[in-house]
Structure formats: C-alpha cells, structure tokens
Length: 484
Ligand code: SF4
Ligand code: FE
Image (cartoon, rainbow, N blue to C red; front, side, top):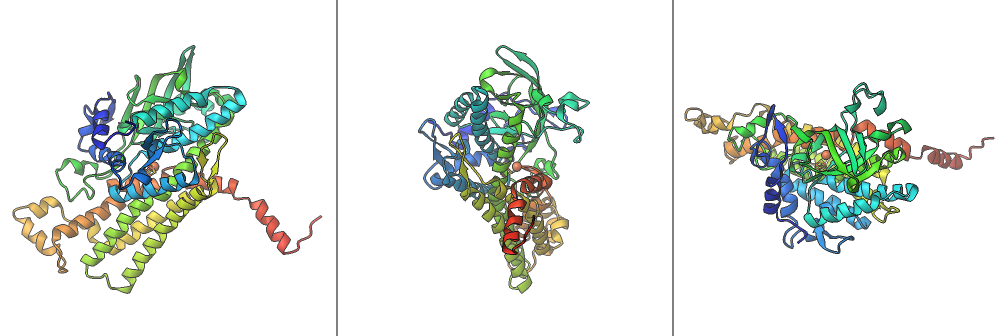
C-alpha cells in the first residue's frame, strides 16, 4: 500500500518524536495542539483527496521507480502533463483548505534534487543520484510528507557563507566521518515542518569555492537527534485557543512556518545528495525555486477563488451585488486570479525534459508567475476589503454574539436587512479578515510576497532568462539598423 489515508497520516505523525517549541515551551503533542491542528488538517487533505475515484487523476500518479500508484506529492514529474496536473491539484487544494497545505515544498524539492544529483554524478562520478532514487522510492512507498528546506538565516547578506561572523548563519558541515557528516545551522520559514516525516535540505544560494562546507544537501527524519523546531507566530493565532469558530475565520485549516535548528545532526552517507560540489548549488537553488514559483500559480489561485467567493457573498449580504462597480471589482479579482493561473499552466506546458529524465518547468515563465503572485493577491485583498466594508476591521466578537446582554444587540445591528443572519455575515467578514489580515494571511498574502523567494529574487532570474540581447537583435533587424 503506497498511499496513506488521512487518518493514517495523522497517526503516523503522532508516532514521531518531534521536538516542537512554541511560546517558549515544548509542545508535547503537536498533532492535537489547538494552534497547530488546523495546519495538520490542511496536510491531511492532501491524503484524503487522493483516496477514492473523484480526484484520482489529479491527486495520484504512477511511480516511475516502483510502478505503484502514488500520491502526486511524492511524484517525479514524467511529462508536461504531470506539471500541469500538479498546478491543477494545487488549485483544488487551495480551494478546499483556503490555506497553505504545506506538502508542495517537498514535492518541489525532490524534483529539483532528482535532476541536479544526476548532473553532479555525471561530472564528478559521485553516487548522489542513486542515493536519492532510493530516498524517493521510500518516500513514495511510505507516502511521506517532506519539508523542502532551503532558506538559511543568512546573517550579513553582503557576505558569503564562509565570511560570516557566526559560521552557523548558513547550515554547514562541521565534521566529516567515514560513515557520514555532522551538520549545524538552521533553516528559517520552514513551511509545515512540524507536520512532516522527513526534511530535505538544500543550499540557499550560489556558493563560491571557499563555501565547500556550506554546499550540502541531505535528507533526515523530522525527529532526528539534534533537530528541533520553533513555531513562527501568526497574527490572531491565539484566537484558536478561545473556543470560537467564527472569530478564527477559517477554523479548520491553516498553515504553519517554523525555524528548524540542526544542532549537530549526523547524516549517514546514503542520505547525502551534495557535499562540497559548490558549482551545483546554483542549479539546485534555481530548480527548486522555479518549481515552487510554479506552485504559487496553483495554490494561491485556489485560495484566491475562496477570497473572490467571500467577497461576492459579502456584497450580497450588503445588498450591493447589482451595483456596476461591485460587479466590476469582482471581475477584476477574477482577472487577476486567472492571470496567475495562466502563468502556472504556461510554465508547466512549456516544461522540458532534464538529463535525468524528469520534467522541469520553463524557468522564465515560472519566475514571471511568481512575480505576479507578489502583487496580485495584495490587490485582491484590497478589493475584498473594499467590498466587505469597514466591518471587516471592526466586526464584533463571537462572544458578543453569544453574550446574554450583547447577543440580541449584535444580532440586530450586524444583520444588514438582506435576509441573512448576523452570524452568517460575521462568518464571511472573518474569513476575509483571515485571508487579508489574520493567520491565513501568512499563507495567502505575506507568503505570496516572500514564499519561494521575495520579488527581487525573481527579477534576478527574469533578467538572466529574459534574453535582452536576442530581443535587441530582433529590433535592429526590423529597423534595418547597420552597425560596424
Ligand atoms: Fe504549497 Fe502554496 Fe504552501 Fe507553497 S505556499 S507549500 S505551494 S500551498
Ligand atoms: Fe510557500
């Protein structure tokens, strides 16, 4: 059985000895913690939807390593159709969770490391690719959720890794043994790490010849000795402790990011996929970033669908749905959302086969995709708040709605006279708040800016891939420019 049910996934997490800290204390049971549980539910959805016939085509694939039917999140893309289906799957999951479902980073990491290790071996005669194929086959058979870990704390951004005052600002090898390496450092903003079985570490940027100890890629169990994690704070996170369904906005699903510390973790040789071949750090980074920038053309679009729906419902409840400017604002949201989707599909359809045999997205289009995602969700959130009205920022609490004295007053003055209840109106307002301001905004708005690399990172890639010289030639030819 290569696929777990959602229930089995949750149980598999429970069986792990994850070291998770939050608010300065160890979380003894991260699976059932009320702040963390919505993020478990989001990942769980990647398992639940893969069961049964309804979403089989999107959610599953056939492993090229084992021939078994596997969850697409563990798949090595074998065609451009696989790349397109990946984006469609992510849109679907964004629609059903309205949150970050976290599992894509691992899928993107395994595809980047798969093709890069093949090319390292070709040049250096190493056996990283063989090691990695075994890891992927096990990930597919055990249906692992993998955290793809790239971003180091980085310290002084103007200095390369080996020149940092504190050498741990970039994760690095501190000891080499015959049977493996010992690594120290941290990875920041790790999406879903406390809901993962494994972590797949990659370097965070291009490396020079003096950065050998920093050019390292490996996998480790999420509960490996020496590894621990600290949960990132989100606005409104403690509302989840208040036993309120309405005020959370999206009580069932959420995302989570963590700082992951590697405090001298031993990595056996068979789990090492890059170890000092500094010139390949860039390839690994660009491919992982490219895949994850493609991903945003799916997941954020799915969440955007929910935001558009919530905005339309808010307009209905406010009695303004027929106003032409309201219709136009909803059209604008759809236009922005589908533009991002178009980019996600386009960079997939234009994908090409790598030397290792798996498929890579078109890197220029993937970066254009993500560049749009750094802007459009912000505009969509602005329009959503416009359509929702000021109550999105001043909405009364669920406790007030249920309060013995306040309840009737809240019910009377929050209802709006369009036939809906105050409670329904408050639910929609809180959902919009969640996506534009609250905990959900981490996965939708802020993550749209910084996730998979901040805007400047894409502009660097667009500059590199944009072929300005080729375009100049086109212009000169048409204009009959003659130069000596
Ligand atoms: Fe997946 Fe999107 Fe979350 Fe990245 S931000 S892990 S692509 S849902
Ligand atoms: Fe992300």
